[in-house]
Amino acid sequence: MEAAKLLKKLDKEDFRILMAIEIGMKRSEYVSVNNIKFYSRYPREETLFRLKKVHKNDLIIRNTSEHEISYTLNSIGYDLLALHALVEKNLISQLGPIIGKGKESDVYSCMDDNENIFALKIYRMGRRSFKNIKKYRDLIGERGHFSWLYVNRLAAKKEFEALKKIYKLKLNTPKPIGYNRHIIVMEYLRGKELVYYRSIDKPEYIFNQIIDQMRIIYQEVNLVHGDLGEFNIVVDEVGNILIIDWLQWVHSGHPNANSLLKRDIENVCNYFKKKFKIKSNVNDILSKFYQK
View 1 (cartoon, rainbow, N blue to C red):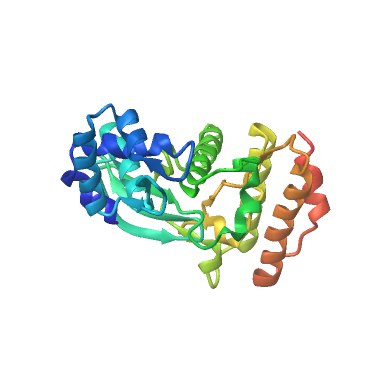
View 2: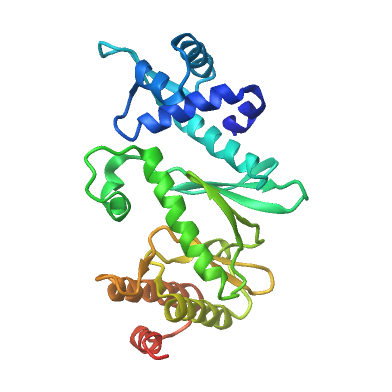
């Protein structure tokens, strides 16, 4: 990961310049040198010197098309700010290899000072295309100006909120350790996504585990996953299951909650029927979610 290699090369003044650009990006995509100077509280000479350094390290993008030179953070610069904050809070001390790569995020192993191993999830929405913007409308609302860096920040916050609520239910779900900007740190749980198993022992037991976990989460903390399928259900070697990727969750009181819940159940039922010949009735299962 490029940002991790640069952590020790930058001074606190460099991070302050990056944060000044981040503040300015709330108002516009590119931030003028004068505004960076204002937000950083540095003299112009120091501002220009630091801008030159972070630009040389490919952490920002320069725009010279306007009458005044301006800058914006790129994804590496944003990664660096988040990693720096997590290190400063003593949540992590070392970054390990990448252990998962999806459409919307990358997952790395990491470690703290006590050698506890965690998973570090970095949101990368917008990496593929802007066509998915409707999918994230719940996150960004109707803002005219937004950056994908900010969307990723909102996504991490939303998932972290869900993880905190679900962890209290003691369902073998990962303990949320902390988050900053677009990065979440959580307990590392071994296992792999259901889709990657050619066969599993006791598929009916696994199916019931998934449905039970969905039901408990729905009844106890009022959450509907909203995007559940074989790609975001993790199964370990002893049959424990874990529902991951809670970006699309909605509260049970949301206008679309019932249809999303039914779709989640249908996805699980259809997969187990097709792959493992497990028969089930979606409406019967759904009715039990509404009984407490």
